Length: 479
Image 1: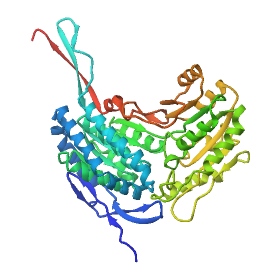
Image 2: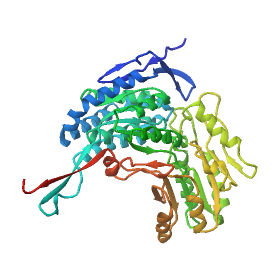
Image 3: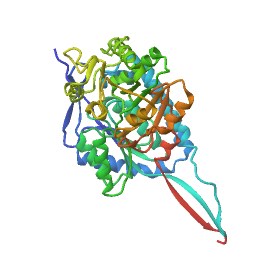
Image 4: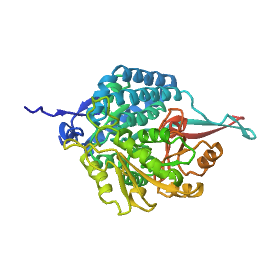
């Protein structure tokens, strides 16, 4: 007996609706490889409708006081907290993530981040008014941008939706948000929750593929295009947005170096790095995926990390002993497998390196050593449960190897030497440098990178500022 896939629908102007032309996409459970739902494949008519709704809702939402917007966001945070179990179940179906990990590691930060931006709504900053020219007073207005076209990824569908809509709504913008075509379900549940609280048209969700995203970015209505995704997708968004000079906010790929010096507690460092590398199946732009370890402890470190990988479990969402679930989709499984299949002869797989089971897209925790700086797996983003290990001789070489990639999102340094940690934090060309830890994020601090990892910040007051524009107003004192 087979169960009919459930039908997901766009959320536009306060109501759920199918794509105008009726087209759909199959949505697959990555733990089983089976279709469990269909979602709309939105086209031009759907994009037009969502943009029209957001544009119509903008003036009233813009003119709401910061205190009024704060109250709305706090109600959203409370509602997310109240319906946490529904969101956890839906996100697990979306992604295959362990239920308990989603409950403890995603829902609390999401709620906290919404509440943070609720507070940020009332903390608009600008230079103090003053007479910078005789007889004239100047002051700064910080205003919302307008309609924001936002594209979220499949690795953290719920949390990345929060990172998109919360600062945008707090600043007074309206939103058209597109989840990934492989993970629309939890975003649409968020739409149900948010839609019951915000005015009609303020928050809209469009499902679809890359072409849907392109139509959103190229549409004349949005004032900003924001995407979290691959470098290729980010470059395409930037190119499309350039045609009418839209503001662009890009959070793209990463290849985080984890620089381990000889004075560390190896057992403790390995334990923490393994979790930071394999969490969410390594499908994290900040994952601890590229270990650089001092040559004097290299062999001991690799042995310990390989054992940690072998002890790391992947499996069903309801198994409380697993650290991570499946890769998100069949293409990602092929992508990760391809890196291992193409390894050069000098590389050695110390642990893992293979698919787990024959159902779904599970992949074993993997360690690869013996690598060189120009190897493909060192230079390109794997986005899977794969940690590479290289050795270095001194601090200078560690910095050279760490910075020697096109990505610059996150990094970490592991040492007991405070001076060395400070020198490395200055020398590492990454948007985040952790010291003796890797992967924690807080709402108050910015997240974003340099180089091909994109530009613009998520979280923090800096992330809030990205969704505002600055206007100078000058008035004559004689008038």
